[in-house]
Amino acid sequence: MKTTAKPPEGATRLPASVGAQIRRRRLAAARCEPMPCGHRDPLDCLASTGGPSTYGLTGRELRRHAAQLIRCGWTITEVRARLDLNARRAA
Image (cartoon, rainbow, N blue to C red; front, side, top):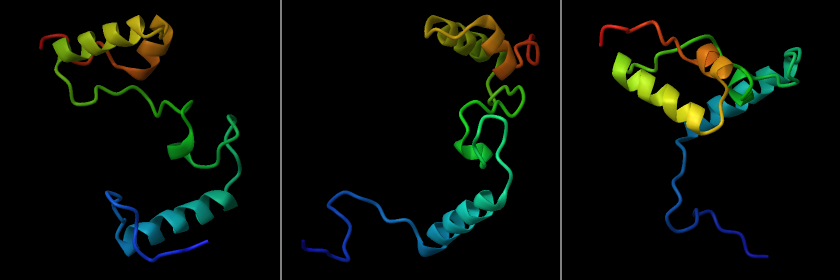
């Protein structure tokens, strides 16, 4: 098996500092107690909502996004838990 130091064509390499940061985060997460979902790092946990967010959208864009999520199969309870639909009523 041949190994090379170069990444494959079209691949991007992370700066060494980013790779080191990711490794430190993984090591720190391994030392933490697992969350109720079983994950140790909130960034790895798809079940973690992190609280309501407007994602920086206007009210109209936020409502359009909520409708799109519902069309994709989300329940209204899931949409309300993820998005703060009342945050920007006027826009």
